[in-house]
Length: 198
Image (cartoon, rainbow, N blue to C red; front, side, top):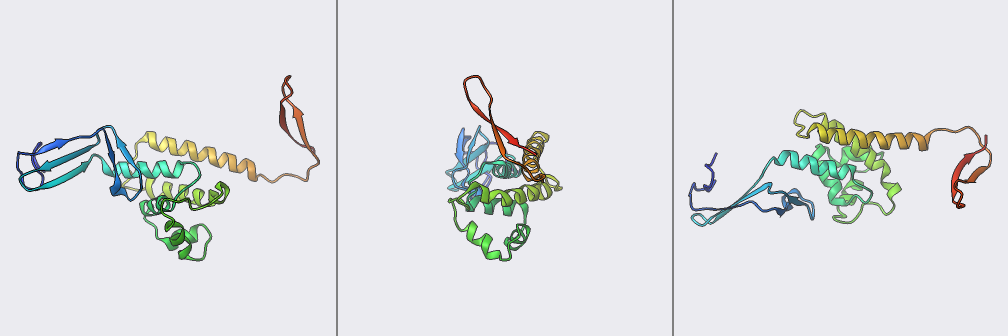
């Protein structure tokens, strides 16, 4: 391990060390990921003409990026899908099978969309997002190498539980029903959804 304020390549003490407050993390394969808060150390050495970059706690950073993507809103892009699939360590073929697609090429086509959304409508993304959340839990959170903090895991669990509760409500089988009722809910005449008569 190189001494502080020494070049990690040649060992020279004549180095310029910088820790920027904002730095674009292009190394992760995603467009526009900005790191904030001096978590990066740049070392520039005039002696050997090498510039090195150290990202502090990079393993956790990569998992937190995945957490942000898997819990993010609709509009997952091709490069974000590729990032999550690689983070979970599964092949395009495995992901295709998990979401009920018969062809690996489907995933390859989606990932090839780069910075463009995979789907046009948010509803179309729902099945993929649920599978990705499940894979993130089993391949990242429950993995031996999980670097996420208990706070990160609690955020994931809370978001996943909220989604599951909402899906259960939407998919709950109902008995045959009568007409839909809509009622006036407030004195100012605002309408509110009621329900269906039995």
